[in-house]
Image (cartoon, rainbow, N blue to C red):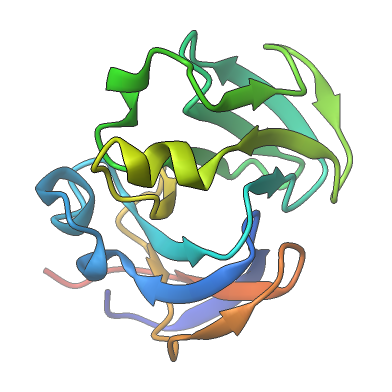
Length: 163
């Protein structure tokens, strides 16, 4: 992204653990940013909280992922673990339903990290922004420990993009 920076938006983490760039996810779809840009967290607990006020757009039937849109219009995909769809919901509990309005900090999902690991899968939690335009980028950040609700990254909005 090039151009004049107009503003930025702080994005809080829905997860507690070690914050990393998407490139560290052991899955090409996420690490290659095919689903969108964002960040990942290697979790220390099994709790997913709303990072902002918004609405739940979709809770996957297998409860390993959900989509929400915040009041700023940012659409998030939260995905728990890699290939965890294979667990068919085992170890996952949804605490919200599709079309549920949520406040920042609300409990969205819980998951049993030990069930994921016992199945030989990675428990890495992914937060991807599925609707970013070309003039929006994830600002560079330093990997670090954080808690759900802490600022994870900033989205930077530029006036124009030069190709």
